[in-house]
Length: 372
Ligand SMILES: Nc1ncnc2c1ncn2[C@@H]1O[C@H](COP(=O)(O)OP(=O)(O)O)[C@@H](O)[C@H]1O
Ligand SMILES: [Mg+2]
Image (tube, rainbow, N blue to C red; front, side, top):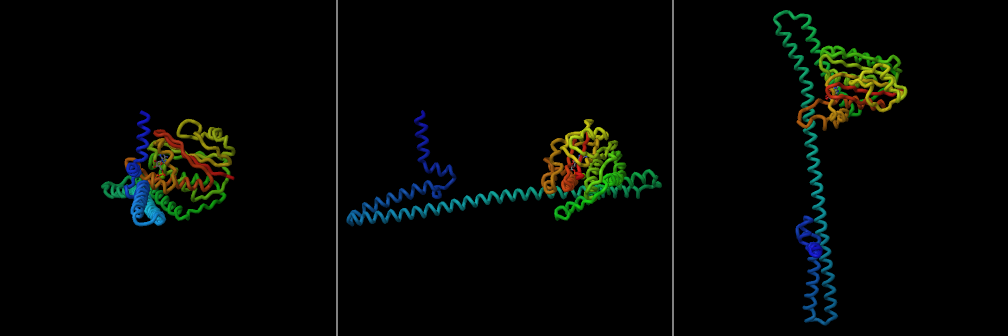
């Protein structure tokens, strides 16, 4: 049995035609076959030369003739093999570059589709608040009776809500354009972070109110001054607060909190001491050790974020456009610009930004800003 398999192996080894087929070469381009073929041709031509020459010439001439024929056959065999080797190599290279080309084409198509989805999303996000404003104006125009103070108030709140969301999106688009042209420059100045946070909360109070969500703050009184870019920090806070309002249903609550962390191992203790709220009751989720930093936490009890989405939230802009524009079903998600802008800004301040969240319970987005 063993004997028959080993003899089969030997036959396969000798079976050049089979080998060529397995390697994917046509017979006349297969190096193994051509080697055998030119060898055979050399033997035949030398034999023929010997037989023919020995009839007409003396032995010394026969030997010289065989030498010449052998030399010619070696040259021919070399040229044939070399020619075929080059053809095979260029064919291989061609098929490799064809493969690379079709891969690049598929990538470009995928990217184009994602960009189209992103544009659809963008147009949708810009169009729907405008539609809402137009609808409110139409309703007010149609009213037969005089418009009550309450109707005026509600309508203005809705208009404010739509305009604020649209404004945030447009500012994000302008920021992204600046980032991409390398024109988003961070100019840090020593300033009071408490003032900036309080102002932003005031800015978004009406937006929260129009959604029926409570927006409040809890800022420690010992926050030191630090160097930061006021516009950039405004954009981080605006995006995190707008998101919290957007993803928290009416009746929900949002709180913007800030503490000073002198030593990394004190976060938990300080968070408890200042009564910081996290989306769950635990005193604080895992935060990488930070020291000499201000920690800002924005907690909401809104819809929360599914686990499988968490690691994609802060992707950079290009990744956002290519991966977050669509989900498996092809339904656009959101432009996903806000958090990537926030991450770029916080990183430019040498801080960290992250989130802990649970679907159905709420989210705590937090970031740190080093004071030294
Ligand atoms: N507070 C939050 N609660 C629940 N989901 C959130 C919250 N903040 C952000 N998200 C999720 O992160 C995604 C990305 O947010 P963002 O980058 O601001 O883009 P966008 O607001 O345009 O969707 C959102 O689409 C949403 O799914
Ligand atoms: Mg957003």
